[in-house]
Image (spheres, rainbow, N blue to C red):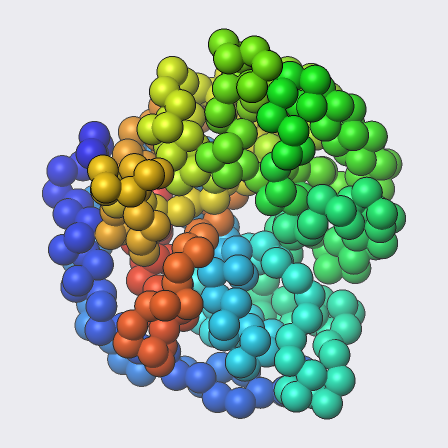
Length: 332
């Protein structure tokens, strides 16, 4: 990959931190948090990028809780949020607000989750909700966002499953209305991409669907969360664009990034396998350089496959810790 700093060998770095362990203790909403982690080997830090040139702050690294959904389910928010705070994460992107009722004998409430965030020095930065909920329960979703104190509310669904120019124009109108409602509540509505948004329209094969959505949504009310991995998959499958150029051209429309790593695999239809951050070869150093210094973008780690990480324990929380270390090293 096009590294800015060739001294940073990402695979060696991952191997060096593979011994990280995570100690978890049972906890309740009112009290105990994760236990102090066991001592871990210290790896040489990667060379930092040039100070003052980055637009992704290293002290606000976030995590999408989908990455550790198995631990949220098994241990609940109290244990998991305490452990994420210990690791160093500061921004939390939600993927639902529920946990097993066996933990408390009932479902946790939004105010209780907010208290756990506050107690652990964490901030809810956003949430992925289903596009159907935006259609049918928009005000309730905005209520939840405000209770949790998040500035953004979004969806990881495609704007529409109708992959035509007309379909995406209709979707843009829908998002504009939802975005205006979010703005009225002091929130920013965002759409998170996968690869399919970068395909060409079925009815106009020279038109990229993502461009239709971007150009026809109101920049005052509709924002984007660029999933860097899926953008590069889109580039692999439907070449002809640079993911960084979208951000460089409209930096203030991209308040959030998903920092998901991928390792090249030509045998894979998508061209890449999802891996822990630091284990892949996506050109992150080049991407960060090419988006330019304007605006600030919160970098959120996500790894869809983290619940399969071994050894387990620590499983997905081990992947979260190793990926946080790699991300912090990249950002300097």
